Image (cartoon, rainbow, N blue to C red):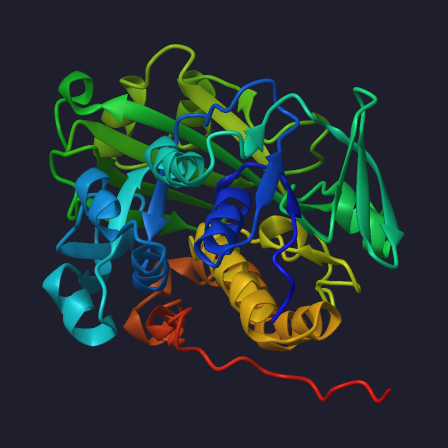
Amino acid sequence: MVKREDVIVVGAGLGGLATALALQRRGFRVRVYEKAPQLAEVGAGITSHPNLTRAMERLGLGEGLARVGTQHLKQGVCDLHTLRVMVRNERGPADRERFGAFQYQLHRADLHRLLLDAVLAQDSSAVETGRALAAIEERADGVVARFEDGGEAQAALLVGADGVRSRVRAHLFGDEAPVFTGHVAYRALVPMADCGGLGELPFTSGLAITPGRNLGWYTIRDGALLNLVALVQSGEWAEEGWSVPSDAGTVLRLFADAHPEFLRILRAAPAGGVFRWGLFTHAPLGRYSSARIALVGDAAHPMLPFMGMGAAMAVEDGYLLARCLAEVPDAGRALRAYDATRVGRANFVQAESAAKAARLEGRDAPNYDKSKHRNEESLGLFSYDVETEPLALPEETPA
């Protein structure tokens, strides 16, 4: 078991906070450093698949998730132009019966708040904002993090949860810029009262596909908001940032041939409430750690959104990392156990998320059906349990 010394977590997003909470639950003292001047999540929806729901339950947040999340009884895939149903999936109690946990869809900010409140309840001073990482120094007895404001922090271990442009990843593996994938996503939250409801749409949670594009939707916050995510294949992405202001007119032009129900809803998107971001990625890593540093979430394995598993993988990472540090009697061996336990699963999901884009947006998209529905459910990803998953323990290094 690792001595209960401080752990620095860089980044206070979902993965960073989940990591901090999992460590706190096992007795570690944690400090989370976030570069943003204040914690705020841009409005967007997020899916808690059964594996993420189970991880949240293991963190003691199952009741909170059920309170802020929405269960959809039926989901599916349809044609963007005609609404013809291609795939229909049963959710709700069916998920509970098959996978032992429900699926929820919710506002990202609500999930972030659940995690943040839980971390601060353990330690009200655990999170510091306005602390942008500048450099890392690894020592035999620990790690020093230096910040752009001139301050520094020392700890036994450091966790990089700072996203696809991670400075922690750059420290470990070199400052290689992430690669644009050729996809741009547009998202909006549309008040149901403004758009007049779902009309003829076949599901309360669904995906409409056509070659080169897809449009996802689901209701959140007890049906008060409709979350929309439109993905298109695009050329070069020149702007920095993952959430650049856009407008509904741009999405309407890109989806001008969509079914009229989608156009009706898009026209109701609030002014200033449409954002776009370019989807970037890194090549898979063979390991996520060094002797004193570990990566979680997009810093380790940037996920494209086609499986909606990015948050789940980040939370799983944090929970398994905490288990390794608590259960393996040496810090270096614990981090090797983390790599051995997580790299295979997370890299597999990263690859499958990218491959799913081709199935949904390729030339054969109009012929999509259940036989082509190779997704997170058919791949068996939903049954994963962060608490009972065996740790892959490496051999002890000879003295």
